[in-house]
View 1 (cartoon, one colour):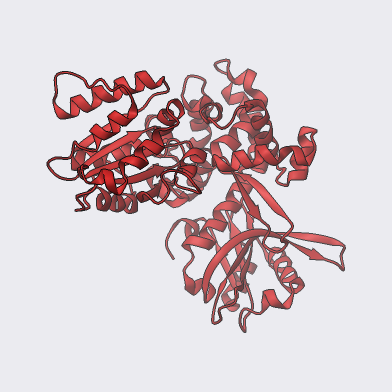
View 2 (tube, helix red, strand yellow):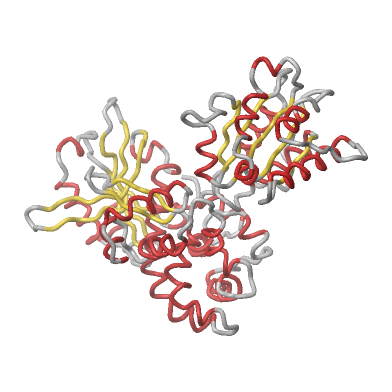
Length: 490
């Protein structure tokens, strides 16, 4: 099946779905689709259902009896039956479902599956029983796809001792678009505008289609007006989206606490101790909320590149970080029409320091891990992280924005490159000297990556001085990465 033109990218996901729904087995099979909200899962599954023929049932948050009634009506519509099915329980409904593929493999999508399982906790076990070898004797080749956005629930569906563990022939996570694909999707050709936009809306497809109705920044000069007319406009859906994201997560019961934790991280407190101080709580009190936020995909827990006992928490959804750093402090003003422009002018220093700078550093780490060619390092990168290097002589420590580890000629992982990222600062020889000094502080087991040692990577959104360009021309261990190189293949 050819992918429909309206589906942007998702070539890998489409190929896997096509393989699954077209599998020639005469038995019923199970697939599980998950991913954060607004990533286009339903759009993708609707396209595969229409292309292959089948039924897509979207569950709602309701009672078991009402869900069974809705499911029976959907099944009757698909089969062209004038009278809806009246199922007394899910055993009966699932048994009937497994017998509808009389003409060959038939796709059945149950979207928002966590809603059904919440009202009927035994449903996963019922599906498991319907897929047992004994039940397969009477089953038809139904290709059952369970989809949901509650990441913690969907993650547990096939793990540990869960009933459906070992039953699925497909486990597909639909990710957000990476920063390059996001620029293509938003049709932004100017790299600077692309970084600014991505720092707010990230790679979530729905934020362009449904939430802004295709309104994109026309260029750098249009970025500020775009922010005020879309993101900070109380009449646009994007305005309250960050608040709704937390409200929609079933695992987040005390939303005030989780909002506070996210606000602390957005303010630059990336260590657990710093978050605890910001909230006036003990560090041990935050273990559970941090774990839950990580489970639902709203934050990431990143280990330090050089210090195993140190790590950083970062917000995974840019819009959530933007809301807590820029919108939440001025929420009362923003709710009144006509105040967006004045608020945005006051909030821009915060945006540049707490949102844009760290976001650019993260894009540089993504480039170093996924877009730099192996020729860049003379080896294959295996992990990229930020880190801290001690300087005993100066009684201080140095922050490293990008540390690239990987393999060259041996099996042992070693340091391939060190990098510094500056969004709005022209980089010069002083930045290069700092990187060289940090390289000299590293232990031998980090620097023994070849004759040339680790590369020095300079990332800048504002460019480089002529002197730094000259140094890079004569020294193959220096790499300069500007916005053009960040966004285009090498």
